[in-house]
Amino acid sequence: MRAEIPILPGLMWPSTLRSRIFLILLIGLALAYGLSFSVLYMERYMSAKAVMLGTLENDVATSIAVLDRLPPGERGDLMDWLSRGNYRFELGPGLAGVPDTSSKGREIAGKIEAAVAHRFPIRIERIPGEVNRLQAHLTLSDGSPLTVDVTPRGVMPIAEWLPYVFAVQMALLILCTWFAVRLAIRPLGELAAAADALDPDSNGPGLSETGPSEVAHAARAFNAMRERIAHYLEERVQILAAISHDLQTPITRMRLRADMAEDSPERDKLVSDLAEIQRLVQDGIAYARSAHGSGEKNTRIDLSSFIDSIAYDYQDTGKAVTVVGLVDGAVFTKPHALRRILSNFIDNALKFAGSAEITVEHNAEKAVVISVMDRGPGIHDDMLEAAMQPFFRLEQSRNRETGGAGLGLAIAQQLTAKIGGSLRLYNRAGGGLVAEVTLR
Image (cartoon, rainbow, N blue to C red; front, side):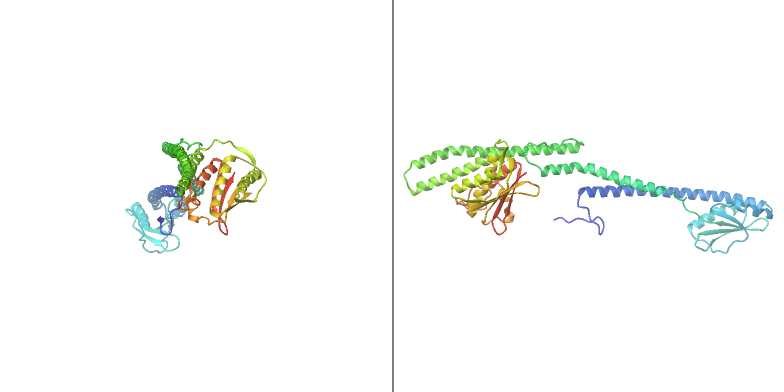
């Protein structure tokens, strides 16, 4: 059994193709969507930073020039008016700080220095604390100290509705991925179902040949394969029927010549061998007929009377066939086909166990279940399915009492399919075999 290959350590491929394709598409689309979102976020961040730094450089240069030209007594009135959200002006030396070595700090310091350094000497320091703050210290023309307190900000705040939009987009992404996978996998599921239900003998409709060109091509190929299989099976059965039919004439002539011969042990052996050959030929013809169907019409029969009549026929010939359980009611089926099925079951039970028991009951689905049971050696569990194949023999000898052509159960299976039932073999508790046919 092939081991699954893990995608990532600790993770395994899902077991179904639908889940695998869904997972691959979803991860790929989610990564592409996340990459697009990241690029957009970075572009917005860089644009916001460029706007902030450009505005900072122009506004600070203008504000310092205005304050430098005002009389000292009027400067305090403009402090609030000149301040912005990310910086403000203070008259005085400000707070003591430490040199700033961060990239953002150096970038902001460079903008402030570019704005005023050519006119006023400036010193920029970082103020320790929870909030990232920078202060630029300079001296105006009249010797008054001035401090520019800068609080650097990152990207503009995200709107409150944006997370909801993101959630809706992800939901749509999952829904569209699921729909695409379902649309792509559905034809494969239909093909698998058609393959499971493949019955070349059935005249039911073929697989639909509509849909995309690839799906239609696969459906046409499957239907053509179904027809070829049916043709091959029909040829095989026709050959078997022809050979079996043509053998009857020479067998009959040989039987007549043997009957006219003088009594002797060799004559008796020859007659016995011819009878065995004739029985094998008749089994071959019966199998061919069961494969093609007899054209028998469905008829309503009384179940208890039908089973009793089969048991009485065997009892009249001295065979140990008993009915141990019956249910009243009627069934709509092909009576001759059903009789042949049950006769094959009973013949096998008599051959290997010497007796047979018949029961009739209703299962949980209200279907009629007819069982033929024996106390023989049974069949090994590994050989139960093979026992219903044509020409398969559990007893490999050519003994006329226990051997045979191996067609009895195969004929029963063919006829069961023709009447719309199902056949099952299983070993009986305590020893023996149960052959069960269910009529739906």
